[in-house]
Length: 132
View 1 (cartoon, rainbow, N blue to C red):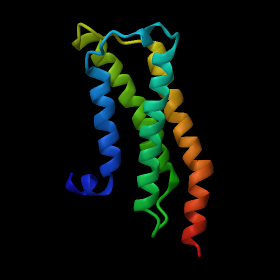
View 2 (view 1 turned 180 degrees about the vertical axis):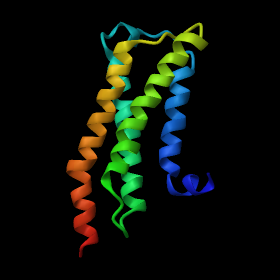
View 3 (view 1 turned 90 degrees about the vertical axis):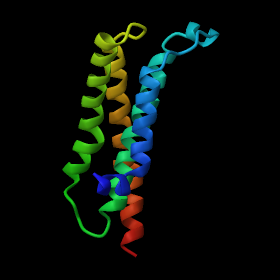
């Protein structure tokens, strides 16, 4: 466990932030009147989580070639499964939050966008830098 804390500190910080934001009772503000702002926030949270998992995976495995499917599992599949668990916990374990299929879809979209962005944009630059 300590190994993961040392190798993925920023990812764990982002995951902790997402957990906090998923379960705290938000204050009522005028921002609640903006349609679908909640879904945009979900996309951004999970894109950030997925992107950070990818970045730290690439940083930790740049000296040897780990199979990239490990990054796809850790950076895309795990956040989507995590999102499903969070939605179920919100529905069945809180009185002030509810699970929502559209939230799960927004979370999966964010995880996919974060993964694709790092894979197509950041990964080639990291590997190009390491080849010099």
